Image (cartoon, rainbow, N blue to C red; front, side):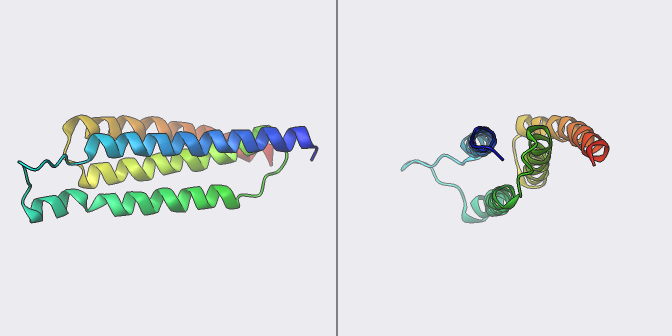
Length: 133
């Protein structure tokens, strides 16, 4: 694989990782429970609302580790399809955790839309990768 192709694939990988981090940060920022000196949540309620957070972080970390371990083929199309499939699966995993542990009806609705859209795109990547073999 020549230097230009490796540099391009690496740049695409870094963009995907940055996008995943930004997406998870946005979800965390929207679902984090604000606490001030004058407000406090009961301990049980706070623990319940945070149950999905460690799982979500672990899932994101595992997905990023998997993407970093992925052997690049040198075929930009194939590498894009494989990495985006992994990225979309991470979105599904995070959306499932939002449905299971989230409180916001708005974010739960968004999670349902993400699941619907990402499943369709994963199927398209799978179909393309099957033809590519």
